[in-house]
Structures are given as C-alpha cells and as structure tokens.
Amino acid sequence: MATGQIIERIDHDLEPLMPRFFDNSRQDVRTMRDALAGGDMESLARLGHTAKGTGYGYGMRTMGDIGAELEAAAKVADAAGCLDAIERMDRYLDTVVVEFRN
Image 1 (cartoon, rainbow, N blue to C red):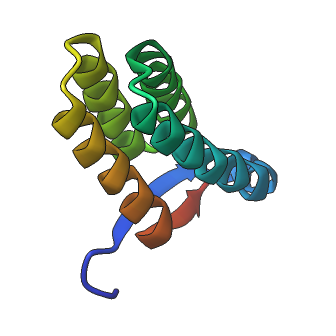
Image 2 (cartoon, helix red, strand yellow):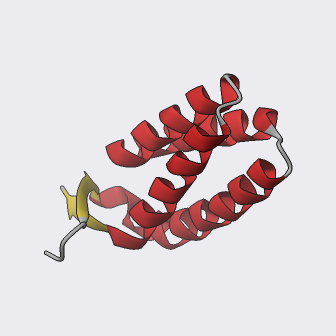
C-alpha cells in the first residue's frame, strides 16, 4: 500500500456503481471549489451534506467524515476550514483504495 492510501471496504454489490460514484464525486469537488471561490457557503454546506450522506451510505467512512466537516465549516462561513475539507476530499478521491467484501 502506498503512503497516504486509505482503504475502504464496501459491499461487493456496489462495485458496478463505483465508476459513476467517483466521476460524480470528482465533479462535486470542482463544484465545491467554484462555490468557495464565489463565497457560496449555502452551496458548500449542501455539497458537504451530500458527500456525508453518500459517503456513509456507500460505506466510505472517510468521505462521510470529510463531508460532515465541510458542511460544518460552511455553516459557520469558515472559508479556511472549507478549503481544507475540499483539499482533503480531493486527495481522498485520488488515493482511496476500495476493497469489496461479500
């Protein structure tokens, strides 16, 4: 395992959904960056909430945790906290290794 990798073990039934899941999540990170650049904390809170629910729903706990942190930072207009969460989400998506379990 490379340094910085996170392993998420999720249900094997979700395997066919993973390509779209990652495409959508990467698009969401781009949207998060745009919202932050525009000072749109409402959109950031919503995107964080969605990432939290999606991450936890898919069994990707770290994504859910980062989404929760983004949502919380956006609700108090903490731009630095939002940027940190967005950067960590971006790195997470680049380094996560998904293992499927029965």
